[in-house]
Length: 233
Image (tube, rainbow, N blue to C red; front, side, top):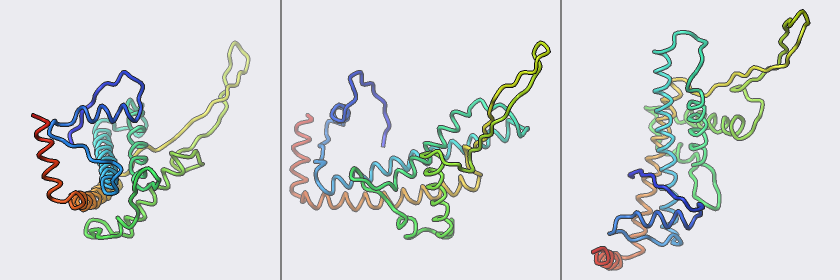
C-alpha cells in the first residue's frame, strides 16, 4: 500500500482521521461498511499486516546500522551519535511485533498457532522459532512495558571523590549499560519470522476478501461498481 503523509491542524479525533482518509481515496472507490463482520476482519488483518511491515523495515534498519558500526568503529567503547535512533527502533520493533499478538475487543490478533502451522523448518526449526518468539515477548514484558530488573539493562550507583581547594568532596552518580539491538543471527531469524507471519496474515486477508464479495453477491458487486464509476465521472 502506498504511504503518504498529510497535515491536520484540527484536534485529532477518530472521525477527523476517517474524514481525511475518505477524502483521499481514489474517486472510483466505495467505502465498505466497517460494521460488517467480514469487513471488520479484513480491516484487522490489514492493520496487523501494516504492523508486521513496520517491524520488517525496522529490523532491516537495525541490521544496516549494525553493519555500519562494524565498518566505522574499531573500538569496543565509543560515543554513539545515533543511540536514540537505535533505542527507538529497537523498542518500536518489539512493541510492533507484540502488538500483533495482543488480543482485545478492538482488533483481531494472531497467536502462536500462526507460527506452528506450516512453518518452513528448512529456514528455522519451528520449536526454536517459538522459543525466539517467547524471548521477544519476554523483552517486551520485562524490559519495555515494565521496568523489571532485566538483564538487558543494568544500572549501578557510585560515589566520586576529588579534592577541591584542599577539601575532599564526594558526589553521587550512576552508570547505565543497556542493549538495544540483536545479534546478526537473531536479526535474520526475526526477519524470517516476521515475513512468515505476514504471509499467513495475507492468506487470511485474501480468504476474508472472498467472503466479503460472496456476502455482497456478484450482482450486488456489479451494481455497486457501476454506481461508483458513475458518481466519479
